[in-house]
Amino acid sequence: MMKNVIEQPTSENILSGKKMVGDIVDLILADDDTADALTQITSHDYYTYTHSVNVGMYGVLLAKAALGDQADHDMGELGAGFFLHDIGKCEVPPSIINKPGRLTEEEWELMRMHPTTGERILRNTGHLTAECGHIVMQHHEREDGSGYPHGLSRYRIHLYAHICALADVYDALTATRPYKKKLTTFEALRVMRDEMISHYNRELFEKFVLLFS
Image (cartoon, rainbow, N blue to C red; front, side):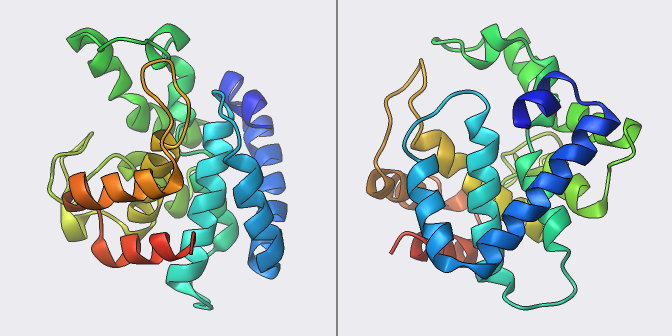
């Protein structure tokens, strides 16, 4: 499903993906044992498309922990936003996404465009909900203002994007990539706490750590 959405982000493929995401979200919310099993399965290996699935799963789990039973959150659309957070990368060449060395300034500028590209794709296909918009546009913004594309900080970043940012970075740290080694869960959470904590909402980070306890 994610392969189809990223390679061909048409309205039909996005709608099909969102329906499947809704089923997965319902499963995660209803069954803690299944959620635990999914955590183990999806952290076993990495390739390009599983990142979106992993972030979607971790994002829904953290949203469940952070939002509880609050009725004013559409968990289906939230899940869709988490799963589709990197849809803008469909216009970034794979050679850049998987480059083993440091990106050039031109390559980095292209990479930094994927949030705005993702928002444009969702808008053009009729799937730009408030939830998806916040997540796709802001998941690389950081609490200390060091993120992109707009350098937002703290309360200017939507809660949904804060949730996605934690899931996104955790999965990146624990994935095997051409340019870095894979970290264990403990190592990744330690790095996030010791080296990146100024990037994230601390209360959400504490809830995220508890997902793995």
